[in-house]
Image (tube, rainbow, N blue to C red):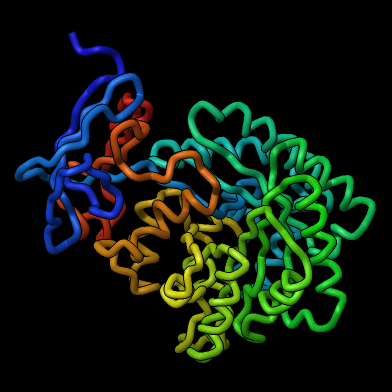
Length: 409
């Protein structure tokens, strides 16, 4: 009789997401895949060995490093038909004024059910945390986090203008965030000149350091004023010591810098251990619009250039059918299929697949880095047929293994 939670699988795996036993060597195929046989029991991989002539594609369950569950699926009631940043903000504020606990509950449950079926093991969700819908959003998503903790990890980020953290209300919110084991976030909009943004960033970082909270900023989400926010952040960090992780989400306008300036900036970001979440779908949709003309330059976080400087970069889906982007469904394979051509990443190279796998896990501080090795969680996404062409041509059918049990066929 097969023990509960025990099983095996023969398939191909990206070489960079696989760790064979010491002394076992195997050369990957030209497309970066290795044929392996995996065995598991009691929720862990018990054997990871080379195999011959395996078919299909297997990867670890993946993470979504940047989402907005509180406003998911709100496009039908609050569309942004202009497709602009300003239009998205205006529609977002209309939605926020009508937000209720029941709506947030329905949206987040629907979104997480999709994530679960698609093979997502962790989601970081930013929450609009100032205004009429803020209290109910935090209450519902804090409860949701606890309810889903056995199935996936949900991280919550308080999203407010960075200046809010300098107010008494901001200090009170920070204490709430810390109590919920959340992340201190903020929006810094370009051109953000002068000392005021630096004072606000300093106060945000001081609160985060005092409370031991990670930081995740919406920064440089723009098609002008290249790297204005990141430069201000670096100026602040040059005058203080911060030990908590700092993530720069979007960082879109960095791509407008010339190569030499970007290299210098990337090296400074790496020196201060800044992390980046690139969001190709939403930024490709919103930014760089010039009327009805097709954009010839799309502001997008320069993933490979930042990687070359030593910056950890993850790729996220951002929005799920809300005013900021009408698509998205928390499917990590669909995200790969759409983002890889936009960013010209090669998934058969480690640098091309890491933003969706190992570096996403690293940025979120997850206990498992997503590498399939002896003793790793038996958490897999399996595509029975094909390989990269199947994954990149359309969101493929898949099986999902969680704790050694198939939960999605």
